[in-house]
Image 1 (cartoon, one colour):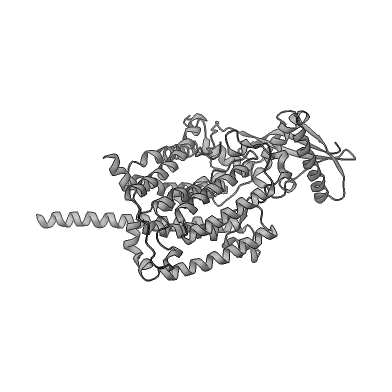
Image 2 (cartoon, rainbow over the protein chains, first blue to last red):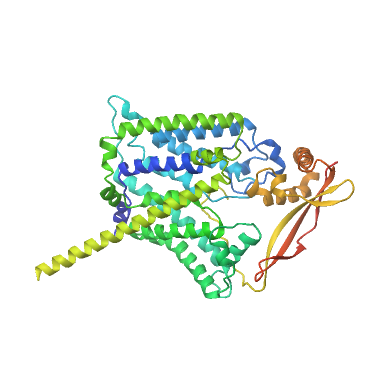
Amino acid sequence: MRVNDIIKEYYIDPKYLSIYRILYCCIVMFIIGLPSYTWISGSLNYLFDPPMFSIAALFDKFPAPWFFIIITILNLSFFMLMFLGVGTRWTSLFFSITCILGHNFWYSFGKIDHLILWYLAPAFLGFAGWGKYFSINIFKKNYLLHEVRINTNAMLILLFALSIGFSMFTSAAQKISGGWLSWSGEGVRFNFLRNYLSLNRNNLLTEPLLGLQNHLFWKFMDYAALVLEFGFILSTIRISYFRLFITVGVIFHILVLLMFNIPFYSNLIVYLIFIDWKLLQSKWGLQILYHAQERLIVKMMVCLSVLLTSLWGLLLINKTYFFTFPGLLEFVLGIFSIPNSFEVSLSLFFLLVFIFTVYMVYCHIELYIKKNNKIYTGGHSNV
Amino acid sequence: MYPSLIFPSFSQAPPIKDSIQYPDVTLYAVSEAHVITQVDKEQFFNGYKKHVNYFLGTIILNENKVKHSSQLKLARAVFIKYAIKQLKTMDPKHTYNKLLIAKTIKYYSTKKLIFTNEIPNGPLTVIDLNK
C-alpha cells in the first residue's frame, strides 16, 4: 500500500467533521465544562514548581492575576467563536493555544494530568475543515464555502491519529521499563490496589475484583494493556485497523473508570472523530441536517452560546467555581443538590459512548454479513 | 515536560505478596500545648484535591532552599499567613504554631485489604508558623 493511499484513507468529509465540531462543543458545554485559570494566583507562589521543560519554567513565580483573567476570557471567547463557526480555522487554533498556555501554569504544582488530546484536537481539525458547515456565516449574503484540499484534510487527521498512537506508545514503553513484561510482576493489580487502598478510589468493578488473586487473570490484564497501547501506533497504517483499536480503546477506558475510578474522558472525545461517518450517514440519513435544518440548527447554536456565555460570565465575576466553568448538566444536577454532579455527568457520558460504540460495532457486523451474503449469493447464481 | 504527548503509565509492576507498600505524605499541626494533630490535607488546601501531595513535596523542597532566596522568603510569608488562617477555620478552638510534614511509606495487607503499618521515609519537615 502506497503512503498516499494510507493518507487518503483518513479523509473525512468536512460535512461530517462539522457535525463532529458541534458534538465536540456540546460535550464540552454539557458535560466536561471549560477550563478556568483564575484560581491560579500569587498566593500560591510557595507551591510553584513547574516541570523543567514547560513555558511556566521560564517564570520564577506565577504571573499577576490579570494574566489569568485574560487567558480565561480569551479561551472562553475562542471556544464560543469556534462553536459558532466564526473564523473557525484560527479560533480553533487559538482555543488550543490558550488552553495549553493556561494549563502550563495549572500544571506548575508538580502534577500533570494527561488530558491534552481533547484541547489539542481543534488545532488539527480547524484546518481540516470542521468549520465549513453549521456556521453563523450562513446568514451572510454571498457567503462562499471555504474549500479544503482532500490531502490537507487527510494529512491533518492522520497526524492527529498518530498523536493518539504516540501518546499510547509512550505509556506502554514506560510500563515495559517498569517491569510489566515480567511474569512475576502484576502491574494492573499493583496500581488497582494503590488506587483503592491509598487514594480511596472506588467504582462499580472495584469491590468485585479486590479479592481476586488469580495471577493468570492479572497477567492477562497486564499483557492486554500493553498490546493495546503498543498496537495503537502500528494500527494507523489502515483506518480500519485504527478503528478496531479505537473500539477496544473505548472498552479499555470504561474498564479504567469502573476499576480505578479514573475518568479518562479526553481520549473518548477524540476517538469519536474516527467513526465510520459514511456508515452512520447510511443509517441515520445525516444529509437532512444540511439541506433543511442547517439554519435552524445554527439559530439554536447561537441561543446555546448566549446562554452559556452569560452563565459562565456570571460565574467568572462571582468566582463561584475554581477549576472549570461547569457543564450545563453538572450545573443543573448541582441545583438539585445531587452530590458529585461532575462525576455523575461524566459517568453518563461514558455510558452514552459505550452504547454508541456497541451500536457502531453492530452496524459494522451487519454490513459485513450483508457483503458476505452478496458474495455468496452472487457466487451461487453464477454456478 | 508540558505540553507533551508523553502519557502517564502506572509503570510499576512489582510481584504482590502478603503486603503491599505505597509512599505517602502526611501533614500534622502542633498546638501551643504541644499536642500533635493530623490535618486533613484536602481541607487544608481547600479544594485542590489532586494536587495536595505535590504541594507538600514542593514545600519540603522549598523549606531547604528558603534561606538563600529573598523571593522564596516572601512567598513563604504568604503561605504561612494562609496556613494560620486555614488552621483557624478548620479548628477554631485551638491555636497552632507549627506544621509538620512527614514523608512515609504505608503498608497494607493484600489479603485483608487493610492498612497495617507506616514508617518514615525521610526527615520530618518542621515549619514554624511564628517565623
